[in-house]
Image (cartoon, rainbow over all chains, first blue to last red; front, side):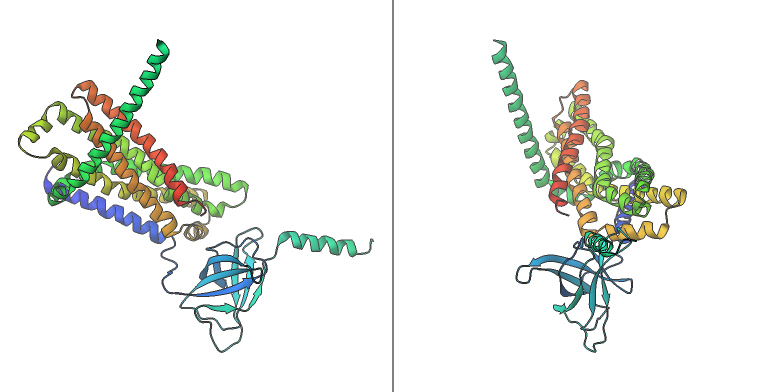
Length: 154
Length: 262
């Protein structure tokens, strides 16, 4: 086969391969939707994180604004310290409320941010003071049974 | 003394195996040190890219499409039991990008391109073309082996990426177009589950490693083949068997390193 034809086909092959890689990164992976480089870190303490995992999403009004980067147990307070990285485009007031919520009945858990009314915004490394822990299904069922037992029999 | 003879046989085989591994390693290092002149004659690499990469395109694309379609079908049937059909996209994409793309593409590559490489070089050795080159003071490793090695190493990740991409498309065809899984949740669940560095980049690293292993085995078996018709055919068979086993074992090791605790 002629040299230019071979060159053409090899060129097509390389372009197709790199194109497939870019398509995987953008369309299949999360590179197209979320940019880690422009982010700021905040942290919050929860008394129970339930099934929250690193890389869980952080949403405000249902919009994805960041990801959980790290979860550790703070041995001074015996509470879970959750480090989150939030997109620079979204600024939140200092008195923002952080809840651990569940998508669907048994879906994965995520952090929902409810902004407060403070004029000042959260900076890098600051703490979200107001948090609400995950709802643990066993506790809920326990409470329900307890209440049922208290009710007078009909 | 049959018992002593049996033990002698085991010892002989072990020594042979270790010796072959040593020779193969030396062969690999020689290939690396002679790669410089191979890169100076880049058209040789391009010619080999054509015969290893471009000629493998059709089998890779067709196989990828069907593997993706089967994943879509089987995944749907299983996920339906738990009422989580919407996770079909992430299942198809994760299994392709992490495992099936690199591994199946490498297996196909070993049987399609690796066997051809071994047969070609083995026949060169049998017809004394390699000795003729040495007589003309042309280093056969730099002229024949190095371009093929780099062509294999370059084309393997590209083929694996194509395999995964086409496979995801196949899963989409069956899952969304045919069965009717919601298109939005198919793509969005996939994007939230697949991480660029953790999944895609690790898959690319895997296929790089497979490319190195497959081409080194294929080239060494060809170069080392006894110069007879039987020898070449045996070497070709050994290439496919050894590299397939090497791919699967290496895949386990790499997976254990990459994805543990993820």
